[in-house]
Image (cartoon, rainbow, N blue to C red; front, side, top):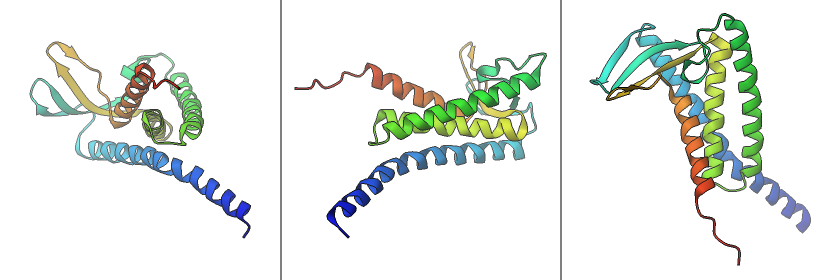
Length: 176
């Protein structure tokens, strides 16, 4: 093996290897999301809930046919909404995957954020394609504010978005 071939082999392995943990993180998000929704679906009837912290947190079982925060769930054309959300989710997952691949040379706020967003998008996309709704089960109420029910995939998308915001506003080292 020539030194050029060895160098090319090391470079290609390194390029893939730096992305492997990020894609593994996305896969872990999907698996945890699927498992948590499976547990809720098997142990709670839709519409029911278990109080974990009174007046603050409950595990519920909501079948969300809409988008985030149940937007469009009351549509008179649920098939159009579902198909539109599936197409949007596929497009978003592809865009995020490409961005992750490009940013995946290193593990940093941006690449971890994109991995979380990709895993969350794929977790909810699976539900929309397979069941035509998303199972939401985390219900939070603080004082008089009641968040719409959400799930692990939603949480990872929000955490990823927050990491991206932190990265955007974090002071960057000056190039000397």
